[in-house]
Image (cartoon, rainbow, N blue to C red):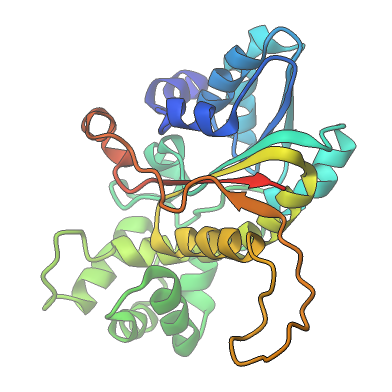
Length: 311
C-alpha cells in the first residue's frame, strides 16, 4: 500500500527542463541528490541507457524503498543510497561517482511526505508533530515546539518562516504547551494571529519554519552545494530546483559567487582573496514551470530551477 500511494501521487517538477539542463546523454554519470520516489531519476535513466549510471540519494528510507521498486528495470544502471546530501562528496566517492557529468537537487518536501498523515508535515491531518525526512534523526517538531525557549522560537519562525507575527505565535505556543499534534499546533497559531488576513492558512509559515529547522535544510544545502561543485567534472552541470525564497537565495548567491573571480569587498583596492571561479551561469534568471504544468500540478507553482556549469 505504501509504495502504491507514493507512486500515484508523486509528480516530478519540470522534467523536460531538468533533462535539458543536465544535458543527459548515454554513457554518462549523474547524481540525483533527492531521488524521492524516482520521477526525475526515471527520466534521466531513460536518456543515459544503455551504459549510463545514476546515483540516487535520499534521507528518507521510505523514498529509497519506493524508488527501488519503481526503478527495478534499471537495476544495472542505478545505485540507491539512504543518506543525507550534506555528505555528498563521501557518498559519491564511495560509489565511484567522481567526477559526475551532472548533479540534481530537487529541494523541499515531496508530495508523498505531505500526503502521508503520520509524517506530520501537514496540518490537513491530525498527526504527531514529527516532520523528519530521516526518521532515524533525533530532533522532531514536537521537541522544538515543546522545549525551545520563546526567544529561540521567535528567531526560528521569523528567520525560516519569514513570519511577521513570529513573536505572537511563539508566545502563544509557550502558553499552550504541551502541544500534542499538527492540528493542535495549527489551532494555536490561529489563536495567535486571529487579527491576520491572508490568502494562506496562518500556520503555513510556522510549519515551514519547523520543517526547515528539524531537517537543517538550509545548512545542509549550503554544505552540499560546495561539495557538488567539487564532484563535477569540467563541463558538468549543477541543477537545483527550489520552492521558497530562502532556498533560492542560497542557490542564487552561491552560483553568483562561484562564477566570479575576485570576491573581495568593493572597498578593497587590491584583490586579496585569490578566488578562482568554478562555475559558469547557464541562465542568469531562474527557470519556472509553464502555465500548463502549474495547471496540471499546482504544487509546482513556486518552483525555481537554476543551472550552472563546472568550469
